[in-house]
Length: 335
Image (cartoon, rainbow, N blue to C red; front, side, top):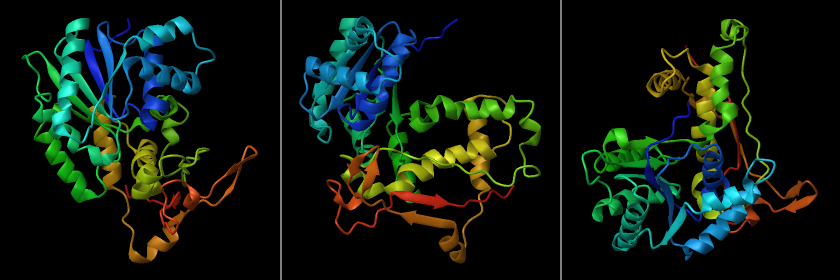
C-alpha cells in the first residue's frame, strides 16, 4: 500500500532559482505522477521575482519539460500538477513584506481545505537561512495555530561556512522551531543510485562479507559535471567546489562507503553510523595537506563541440579569483 505524506502546504523559498528549476519542481512532478503527493496539497513558490500564478506556472512548465527524466510528458497530467502550484512575490529580506506570504498561506489553506500543516523549504543562498526563519517568526508564521498542527523547515546545504557559523545557525533555528521540526538535508542523497549503495552493501551476500579493509585497499569516489557555473557566479565565489560538493555531497558518499551496518535502517541509526565515520577521519598534518589535497580552476574549453568560457570569464566572477572549481582529496578512515 502506498503511504502518502500528510495533507500540507509546501512553501518553497527561492522558487525562481536554479535548484527549484532543475531539481525541486521536476521531482515534485514525479511524485505527482506516482500518486505520492498528499490529497490536500499545494505548492506556494516564494521569491522576489515578479511572477503571477499563471506566469510562474508557464515558467515551470518549460523547466519540467527540459529537466524531467521521463521519456515523455503527458500534457494533461502536467496541467494537473501545475494547478497545485501558486506563487507569492515579495522581498524575502524584508520581514514586513512577509505579510504577503501570510495572506497567501491563509488563503490557500482556506480555499483547498489544507490542515494546520506548513512545510518551509529553503532552496535559497545560505545567507537567507537565518533571515527567513526570523521573518517567519515576526509574522507569526513559525508556530502552528492548533495543537495538532505543525510548522517545519527544511534547510539546504551548505549549513554554515565553518564550525562557528554552523553552530550559530543551529542556535538561531532552534530558537524558532523545535528540533524535531528542523530538517537539515543534502539533496544529493535523494538520488536513487546513492540510496541503493546501502542496499548493495548490506543486502548483498557477495559484497557484504568482503566489504572491509582486509579485501579493499581503497575506494575512489568521483563526481564529474558537464555544467559550468552559468549564472551562479556570485554564489560560487563564496562557496567553491570544496564547500559546494566536497564537505557535503562527497563526504556523505564516503560515509555510505565506509560506515558499519546500522542497527536498523531508520534515519537515527544511519545518522549515528555516519557520525562514527566522520569521527574516525584521520586529521591532516601540516605536511600532509600539500600531498593529500589538490585544488584547481577550469580554463576555457569545449564540451560536445560547444565553446565554454573559463571560470574567471563567467558572469559575476572576479578576474583574479582563486576560487576552486576542482578538488581532489585523499582521506583516511582510522577504524
